[in-house]
Image 1 (cartoon, rainbow, N blue to C red):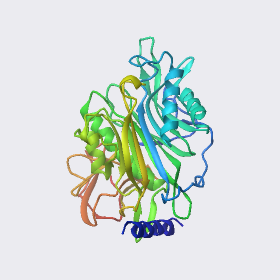
Image 2 (cartoon, rainbow, N blue to C red; image 1 turned 60 degrees about the horizontal axis):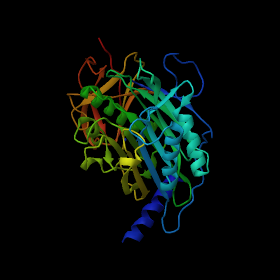
Image 3 (cartoon, rainbow, N blue to C red; image 1 turned 90 degrees about the horizontal axis):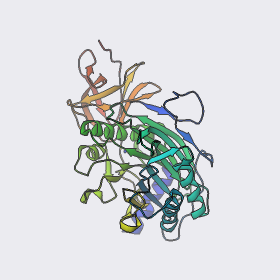
Length: 408
C-alpha cells in the first residue's frame, strides 16, 4: 500500500512540476522513583493514524511544526502576570498559525502548577479540538530557589501520538538530559488518503559542556533513524529504497556552526528552520529523504509578544516527492551490559569517534542512511572507549551487517 502510494505521489508530482540506550516509554510498569517515566495522555494513540483531509490543489496536505522552550514556569521578561495567561497566548498563536505539532522544552511542574496540563488544556480551548501529549522527565530545575520544579521535554500533537520513546543520554553535563520521540498521525496523506505518520523528536542539549552537547546530538540523530526503522514509519519506495518521515527539533544550545547541529547534518538531516543563517540556538531538522519539504518558516513570540526567554520557531511543510535512500544496518549480536558504539573507515563513520548503537531484537544496532554502497571496515566499542577484540570487521554499505564482538 505505502509503496503504491509513494509511487503515485512521485508520478503526480512529476506531472505537475513538468534524523545512553533508548528506553521504551509506557504509561505503566516499574520505574526508578527518582526518574519519572515517560507518560502519555488522552486522547489515546491509535495504530495506523487517522484519515487525512487533502486540501484542494495541495496534494498530500500539510504539516506545521512549532518548537519552543517554555522557560519552565517563569513569567519574567514577558507581559504575562500568570502562566495561565502565558499558555493561553501560546495556544492562541498555535490556533492562528494552524500548528499540528508543538515540540517543547523546559516543560515544568511543581505543586499546584503543571505546564504540560495547562498547555494541553489551553491548546484544546484555542483550537476547539483535543490534543495528545507525552513528556519525559529530564532533571530538577532551579533547585534551592522558589522556582524549583521538575523539568521535562514534551510533545503536543493535534493528531494521535503513538510509540513514545525516550533516550537518556549516555554523556551528561551538569544537568541530566533526555531526548523524546513519538510517532504522530498528521494531516498529510498519501494519494490513497492514508494518513502519513511522522516520527518527531524534541531535544534540549547541554548548555555548558561542548563535548557533551555534541555527543548528545549524535545520539539524538542516531536514535531518530534507528527508531524510524524499528517503528516501521519508513516508507517503502521499492528496490530496497525508503523515505524517512523524521523530524528533530528543539533547543540545541548551539548555533548552526557548532558540532551539535553538524552531527544532525552528518547523519542525513537538513536544517529547515532558517537558523543556519542566524545566531539562533533553536533548530528544526528533517531527514533529507522525507516526503515533505519546507514551504515557509518564521520566528514567533519576539519582543513585546515574548512568552519565554526563547522565541518560537515555526516551520510549514508541504508534501513532496521523497529522495530515496537505502539503509545500512550494523548489528552486534548478543547481550551487552554497557552501551556500544560503532567506528569505521567510511563517512559518517570515522575511526576518531563512534556513533551510538541501540538495543534491538538481534542485539545492538546502528542504522544509517548515509553509508554508500560498497565495502567498508568497522568495529564496535564499549562506552566508545574499549575496542572489541580482534581485527576490523568488513561490511557492505546499503546492506545488513552483523558481528559478534567480544571485549576484554
